[in-house]
Length: 99
Length: 502
Image (tube, rainbow over all chains, first blue to last red; front, top):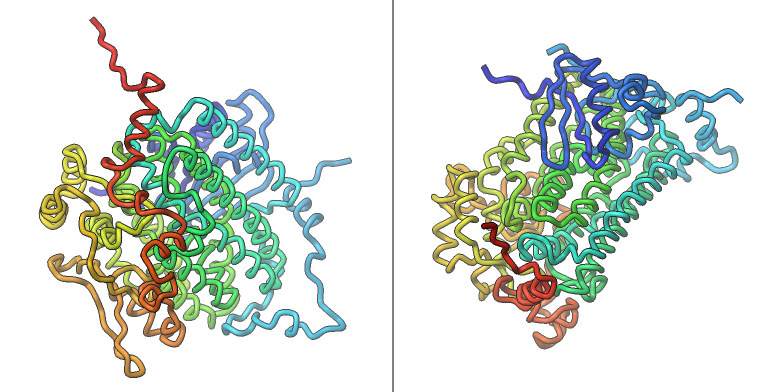
């Protein structure tokens, strides 16, 4: 069975971010059990069916220092889905349909 | 002092950017706001999803600049240009230079135009930020060409080439089309169709190609530019949602714009297909795969299913773009043939590894329809100095030489009679755009006509002078002085040595 690629929301992260991008990926993994990573050499695509949650607290936990959501702007090169929620603590990207 | 949350901080720093004028009629200040038939009931409830304020913006952008210029300086100091895998890559960068950089500057003007004419705080602030972004992009790109220009041909009189070269009518007419549309159409055209649907395919695969061939500088340009795109995409998505939700009467208008600008953006990206599939000797990804991932999966099967509830359908002619994905780069490479003796970026001879890669990535089309053509041309991707001037599409201004993807041995060219004149189009997509607004497109300027009427000067030398480069800077790469200079430079650095391990 082929997977419906259209169900995914996600983001493309710039690997220049090094440990920051690694911590973002770990944080996304922790909150989104069905997350998938696709490696594109200088970018990594992080995708999750229907909804993706990123929390600042989790990034800080993996990074071992304070981190602000604004820093995501430096390394999030692209995203797909609607930005549904965004504040100093978290980001939610999602589709609005059920299936 | 307690720290403000993102929401309250945004409100505090952007409130009162809009006010109701008392002394002057609102419609006099915003004469275009109702011109397109768009109805907005409550613009105040719309927010920029990232709610970025100016102090945050400056801080984030400064960090991006530091990152980029550190990489640029290292690349320049280490003679990075001599270390890439094959200098023909720079011919592709040259094409990018004149096709894309002016588009960045036009986008800067366009964002200012939208912000000026749409009286909605969130949109004004986001377009203000983006207007600054686009200038930054134009500048870091020019910085790259300025460095390249110390060693390679083609871009010595950049401003002049940019202004006068025939090739540039393609991106120029594209942005002129958006700049002469109403502000809401311009917003959908650029913020949504261009930024959300297509820029991924521009900067992600192209930066990946740059990295694959070892051009760390250009990879960094691509990444730094692309890092602003997430914000631009958010503006496009928010604007689209706002127009669709504010009033049902907006929906057919928005659908018409989506139809037009999907195809318009798609066509202007034809050159990008050659920069992904042909110019890099080591490829990161094919046009076909990039199109499937960024456009088919993420947009057509992803986003458009979400828009279905508003009564929005996928853009007209979208099936044609899917059908064309296995032909696009090859057909465009063949089109670039024309007038290669008067172009500032060169073609090159396809090498055995190129044939192998292209055949593998395009098993259904390359060997059957395109390889025989290139072999007949002695492996040149730009082989013939075409004796005549090509007929150009009256919408996208690209020569009418795209094959019909259903019958690739035939051209896709379309004809329309309008006001007693026959107009030609490269495809049904461009023809349909003309039929919606014929009065707009009959005004187009065709460089060949100006050339024939002597506008570029009486002699060929005058024409090159007008374009800002010389005949030696055109033609084929591996037989050019650029290639020989690159080889000599490598020898100086000892990069031509191979080391044996015993």
